[in-house]
Image 1: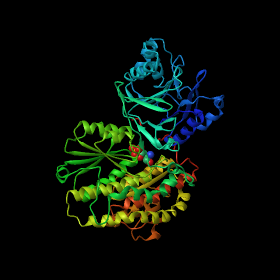
Image 2 (image 1 turned 120 degrees about the horizontal axis):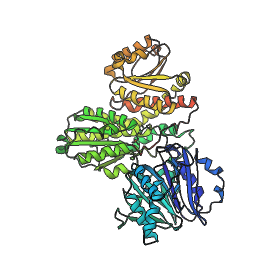
Image 3 (image 1 turned 180 degrees about the vertical axis):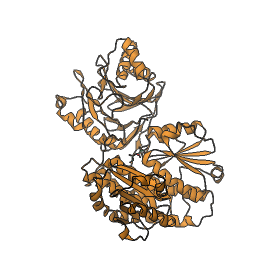
Image 4 (image 1 turned 30 degrees about the horizontal axis):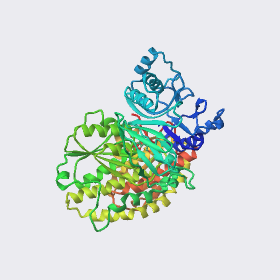
Length: 612
Ligand code: AGP
């Protein structure tokens, strides 16, 4: 989705802005642009295409301004084009704006502004914003910084939808105004300079101290200050938060792609996420939670709500919670949950998972659950992200920044967090379950087994070379393996653009088997000992019909039956999704590489889906 960068300081802004945009490229975009305040007024440099194209725009190297705003656009209103790219200026070229989000009532605002004599040069929803600010500024008696702020506030109170905004004005070369609502934005504090960004990794090499802004809080930035205001423009104080991530964790570190690096970071991500929460001989602790036995006993249902890969982690979490704690747990896609009037009340615990913590549907689902009286718990990877500011409780995975659009280490970290959370629930409930001690031990042994799995999984590369030109690939599994099949299939379609489908293996005969023909590729996940024979006989059925098969298993199978078998280490059946997904992550990766695709930035996708 769109990315925002801003700078106010003592250095030339344009290289810093472009550099920041390059670091935001992973979010997905189709055009880019910057605007700085120059002696002659606002400069504007923008175009469709890659950020690096900005370097070839006429005059870009002559920019001297030390304050500027920048944007990568992911088209929503209007096709990708130079005109639709941000920044946008008002008609008088006094105000420059970049915007992340969607203005739902832009048509109405546009018509009103048209009647007042404003003209629009783009098809975007954003262009109404600088013009609205201009409109209010001209009506302001005070033509000073407070008048500028008031005009921004008046404009924002007309906007319906979501927005993160950076606003500059040619009359105020020493200030910038930022505000957000339901869209991410952080401010990084430097020495006599401040940085603005949609997310932390983009400006991590400049600072580790961040101000986190809440919805409808305004900030006037100067070179050495950040003054915050609440929604009614009363001044408020804010402290910076220091972020542990280091700049190199957002670099490729010698790997060809972020995705590959992140796949290989899974042992450390799991270790860090388990951290000090779990030890072999003591109770599992979550200092962030204060759940009592009484509270957990009275829960009528747990809902796990998320999107995409995070939802798949939720499916694994459901299995853990139900098996260990016997609490009924449902998993739902956030975009469905929020519109189907779900049956929740104050006895429901709603858990929301989001790597970015900024996914619009997941946040909306959380807000809805709160309105209905449920307790809300967020699981995210990004400290201070929007979801943590809405939820009653927040738990962090410690996967480090995940840059590749295709989620890998965040998924396995979410799954391991669910394992420890389930143990915490079970121990608080005083569930008499001897398997908990074994599970704890298995969790502690897991990072080493992930390392072993990574080595073995490299064997999938040859099979990837054989099938990378396929049009369709099917994924099968039963029980917990079915959730892994789903995630494997999502990973493949995301980065290789191959049509991939996953099915519970037992469903084959009810329709999908009609699609199996000679030469088709089928991936089977077979780790559940209790369902072994049933899974194998389903796979046998596709082999009989001519399918080529890749099998991920920790069971003793007859390798000769299949085209390729990846034998992963055995672990606790609750944890097996963490190991069995690894060869499938690498399978997708190597297929995409064979096809020569941009693995980290697949087409049409964004890392952080901040609009619904
Ligand atoms: C994962 O590979 C995808 N990029 C996508 O499904 C993602 O998991 C989903 O958009 C949810 O994102 P979140 O975890 O940041 O909320």
